Image (tube, rainbow, N blue to C red; front, top):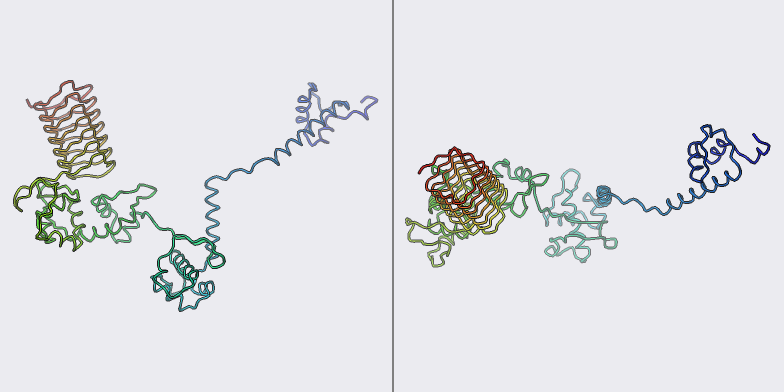
Length: 468
């Protein structure tokens, strides 16, 4: 070391004094412009000027880091963290609320008899063992007693049995937070257990009543339909068991079971959009809907009125009970019916213009004479369906299954049938002018007097029966 070694400092010693490793100090020397490239940099001595530069740079960097740390905003909580905090607060609030009859007595300064009277008036159940309540009943009782306390009356039950939706903390009379959560949906599995039936039967009833199923984590229905479903389950036992070869119910048998005139029942179905075939038959789903609606004695009395002057305009003609009554026309125009099960359903003569039925099931459905212009039928399953005399112009049937279906005399001008399955279908007299049938499968299909003007037949299977 030189004579002025007391003014110099070893590289490694300086790094230790500054709380840095020799490698970190080497990086600092390059940042302050000191070109140290000696492989044995740990053994060299640094001059006072070099040491001053290094110390100044390290001090400024520490100051900047401290200011950045102090000005750093707290990290925003994720949605999951916020939910957990809310749940913890809710649980903490619930723990403060009264749980037993004795705690309600203390909290609201009431006697046990008064508490039990309020519970009896409002159908609130008290557990026989530990005198506690269910979570829902506890909230209801808290709200009712709070309202009565605020109103200064514990005698007028009529005004206090209807709870408010939500009550925040009001001075010291209300618990920390009281709210009533009204269920909007109910799981189908839970509803089946409550009604003591299986889920398959419940699904059948839901399909018949055309109740929308909410496909969430679990299949659910809206609570407002629960009463109708209960009525339908009860009405299933009253339905006649007389079916024709197509599995349809006789409308006369239903009319006889419920004691209503056949002609009035036809009118009743027309007014409520229940399709019937030849005024004689109705699908099992339609029969269940009729039985559900006829569960009311008021409806039956109305149908048995002798005054038949108020006939429905949707029925073309009603002559006698034995006469031919034309099927009423139902308007489905522009309605979205995607992903629905219409197996064996009858849409005969219905207005289905611009209807959306993508991904729906139309197996053995009756669509005779329907007007489905510009309708959406992509990927429908319509095997054995009847589209005779239907107007399907400019509709979309791409990737649909129309195997063994009937399109006799159907108007399919400009219809998109690309990738459609026509195996075994009957297209006798159909008009397919300007239709798009690319990659369609016509294996075993029947053609007779079929119009193909400008129709596109590209890469289609041609194993068809040409009955000319």
